[in-house]
Length: 487
Image 1 (tube, rainbow, N blue to C red):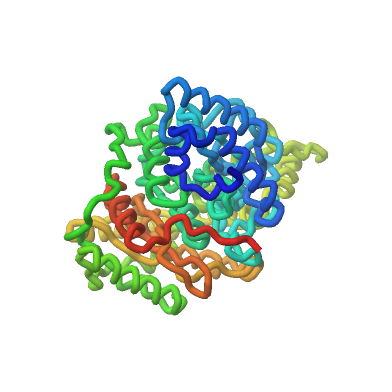
Image 2: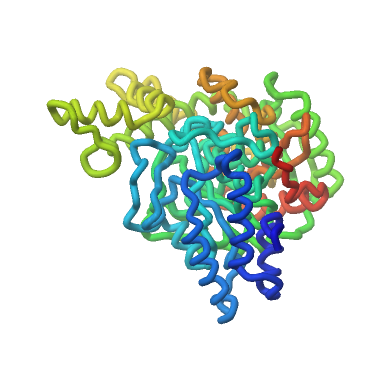
């Protein structure tokens, strides 16, 4: 039973249902794996071992009573900006280092009711601002494929935990690529749902018009199972879709013959590594072998502006969202100064890391008098153009496919002093985020022994087609649940 941590979530569910092992045994296997590798990987900010075993015992009772769901008893990592009652939630920041929320987020409520087991709160870039999980106030996470490399970010802790066997499924959040990019660099599946598919209630905000919670798993089926649980309308979040949540698992196993696949010309950029390009081109051939109609002539001309649009809109929203951290109501507070204003300045100086300060200043500048029209307003207009280009593309295609990242994982420290080079890691994922579209990373091979990801983008609220395409590709390639051996 010691290797139960290697299982996919759905395989573990079948074992639990057949009484081959208990939820406590499964959870203990994962906790033993955490004890073995966590000191080297650093996937978690907080490990909740006692709570996990308590929830596992409750899950076994659900199986005994016949009330179990597909998530019951499965060990899950929860990104540390998802509020959890009674368990500290830091958002990777010193300013919230000792914050213990008095309520649960919507998504945690959903998985808790389903009987999932929370192993711990996953490490992340501070306030989700980063592409490498090096900007966490609690130290970087390491990529399980090579501990000298980054896992991607900002949900790097969640992706690394899945890849390292420190959980079976994880929850992350995606603002401009923060689920898909680390999933790509860690060789796992990650889905960023349509904006409004999943409630943001109880999610510590970065960019409110961009943030979205989504699942990371060993394969597409696990991701679909988690989305079934967390998706749907929530009256506490007015941006959630009021329509009934479709059954995402119903899209698994579908034939994709005749699927119209668009490949944007603009995504073949000079910075794409040759190995990434080779694996992407091989993935296109695989889709064609499955009967999909792949068209390389798609053009999305505003793509080149998406990075600039994102790095104006997201910092502007961050500037407003992070204004609440003033040391008065909650969180870290420096009260050694002579005045309230001096204390507020000292609190933010000590509580925020350099990347968060950079983005707050960028956003505040772009929103300031005299610059609002030139930056923020113009960015919103270009965002509309990007939306229109995607809408025109989906009139012709069912899905759009691109690489997830232009490179494989890079060394820790290689880009941390060069913000622009770091921001370019999200060049393939940001356009779909700006448009609010669903998109998923599926592993598509290895380059230099490191994972390469394929991004599948769908139309609004068409996660089902993304899942069916990803599942068909996954079954044809056999890349699912390929776990690294940690050195």
